[in-house]
Image 1 (tube, rainbow, N blue to C red):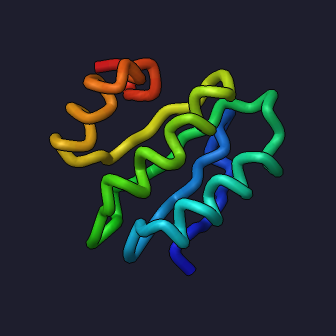
Image 2 (cartoon, one colour; image 1 turned 120 degrees about the vertical axis):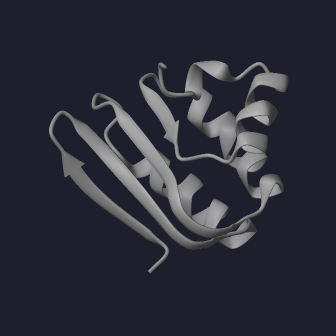
Length: 94
């Protein structure tokens, strides 16, 4: 399964694996609506073997509608894309 949800301390962590494409992005968008908005959320892209940046852009808006969302494990280009879109608040603090 390309999406796994785990509780890690105070955070809910969504681990993505395999391929992040438009289908997985749709599943993730639905999942974000179902997760409790009161817990900080980390979406972990670290273990993907294939990342479609168009899929990333499609979920960014949903992520910015929630407080306390962090995207972890993005490629350098993915980080630059978020910065270009003005969504750097989704990036982990350095």
